[in-house]
Image 1 (cartoon, rainbow, N blue to C red):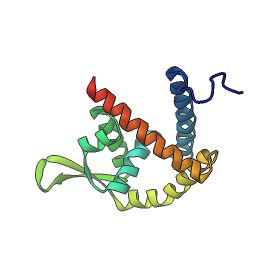
Image 2 (tube, rainbow, N blue to C red):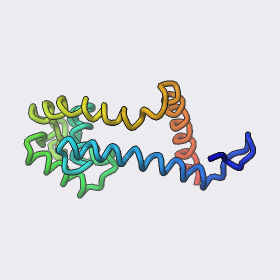
Image 3 (tube, rainbow, N blue to C red):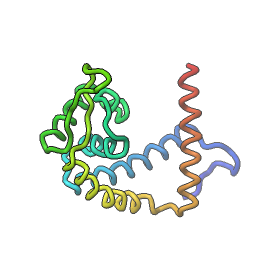
Image 4 (spheres, one colour):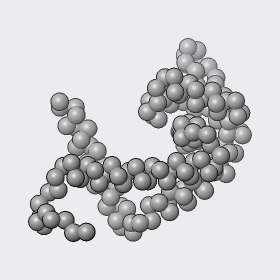
Length: 155
């Protein structure tokens, strides 16, 4: 379907937003199916393990902020991961009031097994774009995100 907008004219913002939202939703749905197929009960369970795998031990509250989870949601996700034996809580040596969450050997092994499969699944979802288009999209989305964050900060 061809756009009725003349070449060089910006799309109406509501139209561009809808395209962005639909694309994100489709990729996110693919991501969720991948996570479920790997045996995780929720996205947040997987996200906790992935963040700890890539970042190392983190305080619970920082982990929650990184994953955009509320205090209650991150506590629940960490509790579930701990029940599986994938993470443990320890006291921060610098501040005993802070609980650090870290992967156990079982959690590290679990992520070593599932991450390559998950990344293959994501690659399939994103393969609708050639490599150069993916790089262009990444640059444009970064630019858009920085601009939108700056606009929000100015309001």
